[in-house]
Image 1 (cartoon, rainbow, N blue to C red):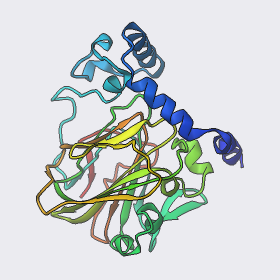
Image 2 (cartoon, rainbow, N blue to C red; image 1 turned 180 degrees about the vertical axis):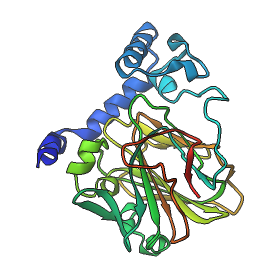
Image 3 (cartoon, rainbow, N blue to C red; image 1 turned 90 degrees about the horizontal axis):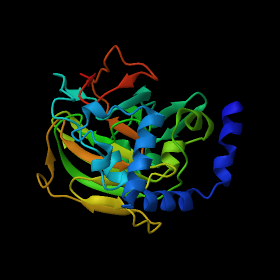
Length: 279
């Protein structure tokens, strides 16, 4: 009950207007004002700039450049595993998909079909499969990397709400990740199909991929889809595939296989790019 009451104001807020405004501010090049905002953000969220490729806050012309900053080459070594963690963040939930139901939080689940833009044939691929939901906090590194090597087949931009995706909201808003705006990326891998879904949130100005650039804006209010020829976009394990301009959540889907998550994984555990995720 507390969680539902805590998120009630989000139903009333002009979330899309706030997001557009935040995107405008984050993309602005305001000189010393931008630097002051970045330095305050670093202090407020205790961002570790020592691992950034460029640790000087004054070197970033916009907040977006800072927020999507690159790390030093040695900052995220890759574990020898079939699947590595694609982001810095925290484990929200993970495990088996119960027929087509993905567990969100106590008392809440949502369907693979809803997450994947209502495409039932696509959702069938992941029937009784596995999922992982990873939350990126403001302090985290916000580039997304490949859990394993893969060839891109399709990308789908799904319009939706822009609720926050923090743990309280996940417990208080039913079907949160299938309601929010999202970018669905579908890959063929040596281990079978894989869906990697970038989920938007309040003040997430946009999401981008390395092959397309910024996906949103524009926000036309309709589902948009792109298809790719075999081998047209091929990414290696650990290679960057996209980024959030302000933070959010990644949801991963796999079909029914013998996938086993790392025994050290647990909800709320902090994770980093390159760590062992599953075998």
